[in-house]
Length: 493
Image 1 (cartoon, rainbow, N blue to C red):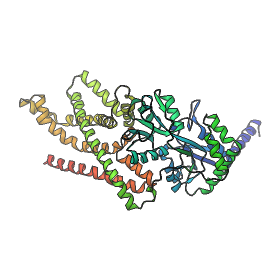
Image 2: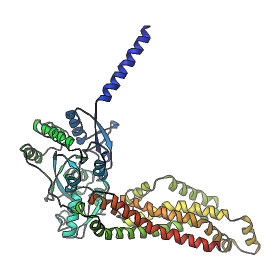
Image 3: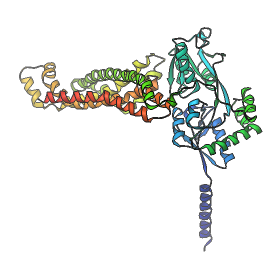
């Protein structure tokens, strides 16, 4: 065998051996949300393929103790508990808080970090808003699936505070700076970051509550949970956890007190408002949540109808301009249609509500109405343009020979025939818009799907809430489809 061939064989053997060794090293799949940002989990600015943060280091510590290789699994923050229940990863670590609902249906680790809930307000309101009592009737923002959200729900019942739930922890503080909400309640880590990013905000020092970060595992993973607990307690004892939190400038006097209690064998849990939703029977859950779902369905229907009306009006104007207008009119209209159709509705909603906030601060419902209406106007305009151009030329020539001008021809000849052609796709678009209205929850509108997700999170299951939500969407959409078919039959006759 030649030296070159011998080198190739050796390289292949070494590669195969490395692959076998890698295959024999089990992974610790840990779930987190990189959108949460530093210091929890974020993409490394130097290498976006990696993630960094204190939870990344905690996951690496646990993997080393368990003899595994850590592998990050991206999951949206509000979906981490549901993903843990499904077994999508071994453990969830992303600033997940110790909530009674989690302990009722998941395997939860010992706490590894203590935090304080902090109320953030505008500097000009620092003397006015210091407690929930001061915020009666005021809008207070928070993040879903947190202790702060549980506290705000309790404050809503006791003091009339109006909770506003966001999908992320960045926009609550930017909206507070803009005056869209009157306060933000989140943990101290997020509150400090929010104040640094938004001049003019201050954190109040009132005691709003204390919570803990924990890991979440599948309910059947109690064995792995116990091994993780042993690893966490060992890291508390020898100072490795302290080192992690000092590197991220998060160490404070609350941590030694927490660790001393845990190492002394004391069970530490978060004192939070306990919702009994997870223990409700099916009938009781339906009775309790059905009124809120009906209210959310009404919001969905009203929003969809108004948005569709706007889409029809704008779509008709755009279609008429493209059919009858001069080149100077048609070119910008074509640009409008292509830009709207070529960009995601979700992005358009973000731009209208958050991006334009420095110019015009639209209420959330109005921003949702404008976003949905303008988006569907682009599609409606193409339907109407195609319908207008589908009317036979002979019909138009006959109208002109009878002395009709363009407006009369459109009103009496072309328009009615085009409407009959456009009716089926218009109906289809309305049903699609009804479902797409679920996207407006990202700009804090609590419509049917968002209310359903709150329902599902509270009872720990999507089966019943999902079935109820689907039934309500059918109740909203089927009459429209039936009415459109009846109208189409009449037009044919």
